[in-house]
Length: 158
Image (cartoon, rainbow, N blue to C red; front, side, top):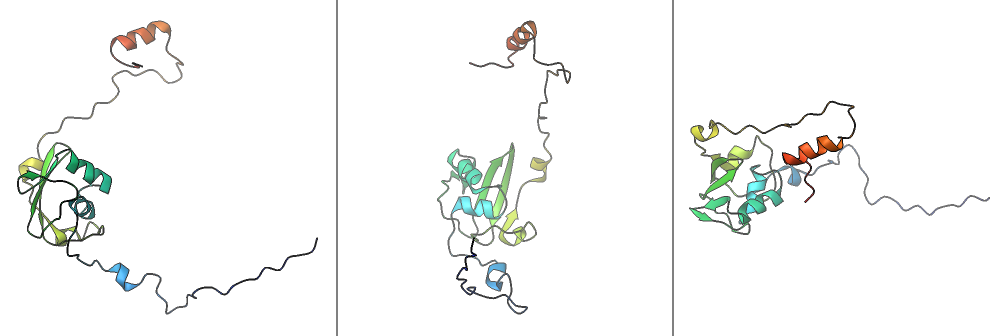
């Protein structure tokens, strides 16, 4: 079987020791002129994803100046944003606007956390673990065990 010769094109660019892998423009955080509320909450690490931030806004867990805010609301410098998350009411003052997520060390440049210390120290309800433990290797529950589990609300298929 004869070998096929492929036409190889030259690379679009060549990396050498003077070419940076990441341009300086990407490494710097540049403040923007306007930014959406959900994007700002995500960027300053209040929420892990932008979708979670948008859902919190939609369900009324985020207020700006005492009024519920939509995810598309524009954030202004000096706004005080109140977020109810995990049974904790957190307050943030907007110091600068940004549209990209920043590292945790840079967050204080963009947001001032005004959450009361008493709010952070409130007792939280413990997360309930499994209240029915079956020994490992015991196999499927018997009909009698299954009925008793259904009676207390485990394995409801309805």
